[in-house]
Length: 148
Length: 351
Image 1 (cartoon, each protein chain N blue to C red):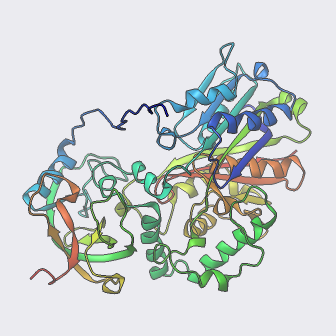
Image 2 (tube, rainbow over the protein chains, first blue to last red):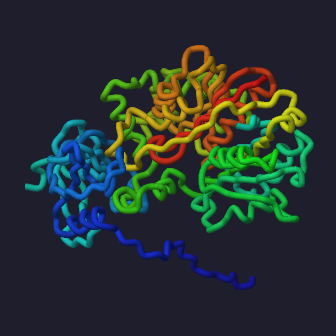
Image 3 (cartoon, helix red, strand yellow):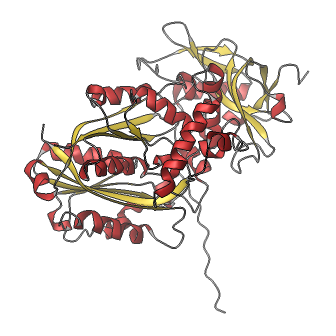
């Protein structure tokens, strides 16, 4: 049988992007182990922060630290874990409103099973020891007190 | 404003078109749509398509599919990386500008080679959401739980929406999921696929394509006994980040409905491109649909969701009801993005 020709193909996005003054600050904060939100003119705080107000489109600049604790507003259970995700074990996915923020963020929930999750429960951030300024510097959120 | 109508539609959909290329898929569909009104490509003033390079796995993949149209001698052509409903909007604008009286609009999607619920993660913002690869079912489940906990919808209501689709699709050859026997009880007995969503809450993924011919004014009357006149068409967008939105609502859908005049008169039928029962429920409320409007009579997008074509298919389904005099005033809806982030509403009437 003739030898089959073979060539690897890597789908890639070969551009460099700058993350800007708000997303960049948020990602830098993650590397330092803090979570930043951003204050809107009405005093409410968006986390994760956006560069522009989602309603008025006005630029936002007032970064404030939020979390690391917060409230779970919604959850689902991901089993099996998705192959490309940062998680290699079954895990929860949640909407987490951090203390000091008025909007929730999406992230993983690190518990043994769905019975460990409920709307309204208190959770707190778990950090990876090695951080690089990436949303997955947060390993996920765990029930408050679980890491003590 | 020029009077512009949908004068012809054709579509095909099945669970997986494993051995069919996009060109092979679209040749008969485009021929059927043009042929039904006696047109060849020479008679088409403008051609516009919608498809996704992320599904094809290749940049500028739509250029290949032009082989199904016939682009020699050169044609006036455009493409959107959106559901074909947005290609229809571009064609409608082109016809409004004038200079051409006919347009061919088509779109297609083949998601079966991959895992669509994961591929859809690539539509998320690349900093906060995308790198976590949250799959489409899990993200929809977060919305569903908020809706259920806040009482904006009940399990029972979601099951009834699923049953409406399953039963309605029973005699629809283009549906890929149907059941004449399904009841709310049988749907509620399903094990969750992404808690609290059950399999029947999530649209059945399909491969397929759709083509539509538009014509303006007297040209439409020449080509079609009963053109589906576009009386209003509008598309709007909500913010991307789920946290800044009320996930029980879709304000952009309401705005598109108001701007397209959907509520100005009785609607006989509405075809909604919701990928989840939760979102079909939201759409019914945001679009102001009332009793007397037949919603997704043949199962709608839940019974077969072809990525990039589900919206244009709904417009085609709605227009067909004008063509064969089953309805006098209809609404076709298309959506795109996370949690119905983008919505397009097209209101059509017979004469």
